[in-house]
Image (cartoon, rainbow, N blue to C red; front, side, top):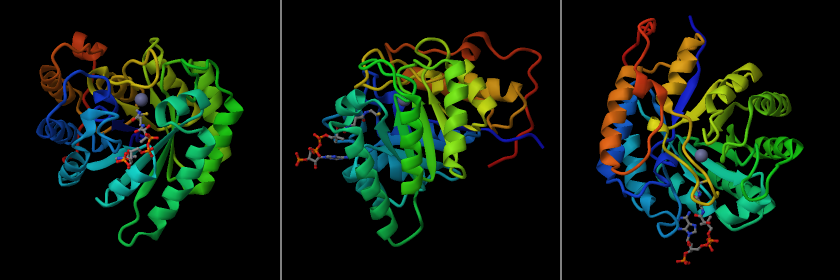
Length: 311
Ligand code: COA
Ligand code: ZN
């Protein structure tokens, strides 16, 4: 039995934030269906932000409920505030991911409040979740700009650890440590992720890397060494925060799966199926730049596709 590593596809959310095309809901759902067929069930499918802030997500309700209806799919959604969380809770989704930034300046640019105000908003979101009837919704809590910020520069590691502890103590079911602008390096990732894991104990941790400066997959390796077993990634390397100057794409899903499988982890994903799906997504987004080495070069002859269990 190989050890599991989880890859969460964030393309329909992060991946679509900077693209010029508004993708029709049916295509977003075809993307989700294709991911599940390729063996990746965890998908961040949309964002509950005001449509005037990011018009791409005007169809958030339709996409989230459509994804929840796909057999085998475990959709999550991003929310920036209590109002977004209430919209998401109304749909009884499995997981809702909140986001705040360790950098005060990025938090102000992204969600128009201080980091402390965002932390207090998370407490209200947990309370709202706990007051609901019905199945318990898991709450992820993302810490953006955890490795540095294009507005303010360096971000204190101690502050990231403190925020992670506060989010965990408030009731987060998962902490997602994000390198929003690709400032992290492997040494920093190993150090910070060890510190976060040691500080928050039982709460699972995921990493969310952007490959802006080419260190995305090196950072995955460093995070694995620190004990992280869950990673966000985006098909074709799409992605980027519209409120972080200079942001570019997430680590590429196919390449991330390839790395994890080569290192002996079981991702459950079929890389050939991911490459085929990527072709469709590329054709839906004319004029965009896509990244990813495996889609360009193909799998090596030496790659042994793991036996897959049907969903
Ligand atoms: N969904 C829908 N509508 C929302 C909303 C949400 N999540 N949050 C607020 N609104 C509405 C309010 O009801 C209000 O509507 P009204 O003008 O009709 O009364 C209006 O939007 C302004 O509300 P306010 O609370 O003042 O928000 P704001 O203007 O301070 O913006 C955020 C705060 C968080 C909503 C906004 O900055 C945002 O969406 N940021 C997300 C950025 C993002 O997605 N970044 C990329 C991912 S990291
Ligand atoms: Zn991101």
